[in-house]
Amino acid sequence: MGKFSVFNVRFSIRHALYCVCIAMTIMSCDTKTPYYHYAHTPIDGWEKNDTLRYEVSPLEKGGEYHTSVGLRLNGAYPFRKLYLIMEQEIFPSLQRRTDTICFDVTSKEGRFTGNGISYYQYTLPVCKEYFTANDSIHITIRHAMKRDILPGISDIGVRLTRK
Image (cartoon, rainbow, N blue to C red; front, side):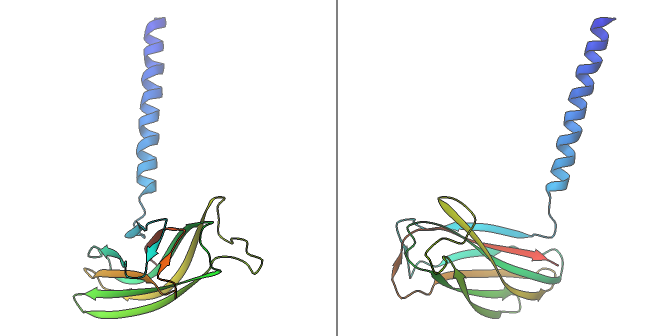
């Protein structure tokens, strides 16, 4: 009888672990975030003519969406601010939207203001837009700094969330 009860306990623990894994998987699915992607840039220098591209698949639901841009950089970035130009083209309506984004990267004293230790993370809300179901979006981002090559930037991300 002792072996039988040990078998039941093992089965119960295994069953409980499966249930927890399934529940976590279901809870981690965020239907309000249909797109969240980071594109990498060369850490030794992001060139002005290197445009990052993001392709948002046709949206399942229409409604108000918020777009935000994320930035990851390290201590090699030489400026206090970073200016980006984000262009969106919405299909099938062919609407276009252009935004200039300014990240305040360091304080006046030169300390990085983002979250992190050796790499710093920033997120900035950019716009609110109404999309209809089946709209797809083509997004491009490039830097708008006077310097042609910017060192220290590792990733630029785009997040689209439905309100």
